Length: 261
Image 1 (cartoon, rainbow, N blue to C red):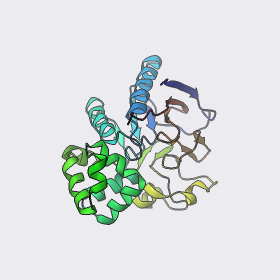
Image 2: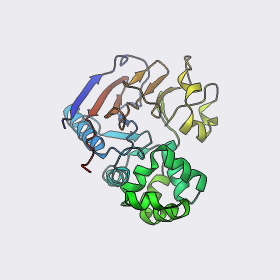
Image 3: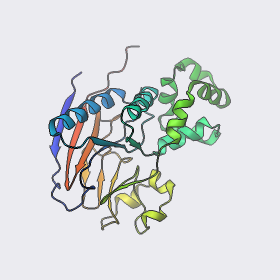
Image 4: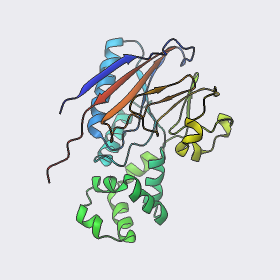
């Protein structure tokens, strides 16, 4: 398994959009339970910081840390430790974290949805066996899930934000509803919106940096930047760095190797 580094300057780096002076931000796209890609990308970010010097980077995770990939519990554990090491690190609540928390709280409808959108892999990552998962009814599964998830993981996810504004950029999980002021955006749109936002081609209040919708490459348009390159599907986890009017891309790529049966 070979990890590849992709670090390139954005083709739109000369655009006027800027982050506050004297700061460097790194926005990280949807991880979806790929601890291997997370570890590799964090190493790339650290190397980038050391090579460039200047201000320490501030990390913004765009949400969807969990589901679909094999290591959701491990991803959460790593990021709890990361926030202790780098207290300025910030996290956006993705739609998958929203469903995770609702299912963990005993919402049967949410637990059914959780199962359909990759939550099975998340539950298994907490040490529940495939046989126990398959044999459980929803009430039993809810009880097992609640018992398996540490309180610290729940509290960590509950601390996540809906929106982060920095300079000329707004960071959200899914997007914004066009025509609605940022101060009036609904959390449900910030976490779930898709087509109404993706098909919009006109300027927005700020340049929107988002994940949620998978594309094979980073999507860079004048009004939005999409950083979900399909960690669990394509094996690529992307970060974009912002400093002044510049921005550049770092990526970790590797194919997932399933454990032998």
